[in-house]
Image 1 (spheres, rainbow, N blue to C red):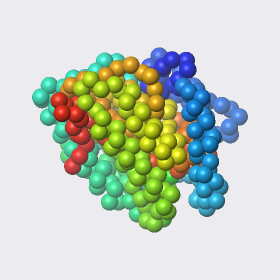
Image 2 (cartoon, rainbow, N blue to C red):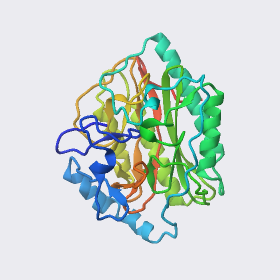
Image 3 (cartoon, rainbow, N blue to C red):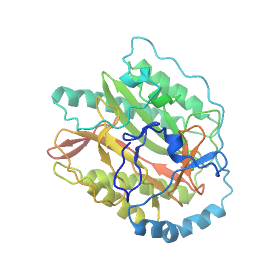
Length: 352
């Protein structure tokens, strides 16, 4: 997590935990609003007035659709005990501490051995995600998805990176419907028509591979399908412009331009990040239009993980200090890949 200029929102990696890099306060205290009855509002201090205008007018059609929806709002379910990991499996350093390490400063540039390790962790993460997607069907509990993901990761000699990160209790994030990110797997069963983002990160041989996708559960309506499709297109467009020397800010422009075209909101408080031996590191990758400095460097790895919403892009945090949902209950979708910057552009490391 990092702080930017006073005109921009506080930004968080999509799995950053409970501390700001430059703050002693836990996340829930930074977001606390005692008047909101059990949930914490994440204040949208946007960098441009235009963003607020977009939220007000561009998404009006989608808000009207929300009002006519019969879909029930998410509610917390029962969370099962933390699953064990065999002692012989290498653990990331943060597992011994309940405090989140935040975003490490400095780029990690990989040598050939590092690239080989990143490809291995990325490939395993992609295989786990693909398997998890096959489990998505009406009636399955998100905790059952977590159990299957956990078992597949440890069977392959890897550690599920989310488990124990800043106290996160599970091995995968399962974000259903209006959940933007960090959904904790629990006793809630998926229902026909749901959409669910499954976010998988594995720690294999000392390197993290990080990826996510949004899946359909049963018969999903056209509006939800379109949101998911456009979110995937945003990621693809962002990846296509990556290469050595390219400004990071072009990622945000590519995503924001395409989202605006389809009248979807772009979540600003959560960002992509460098990944490798460290789970979260520089660069901070913004998914919306911005003027941040910095250019891509040959041999570095980072994630791009846009989150789009059908209505408001303003997030609200549950009392569990992890689950983040849209303020108006509108649907949200996300896709993510880990990339390596190469001489020819970008290599997607999280592919099967």
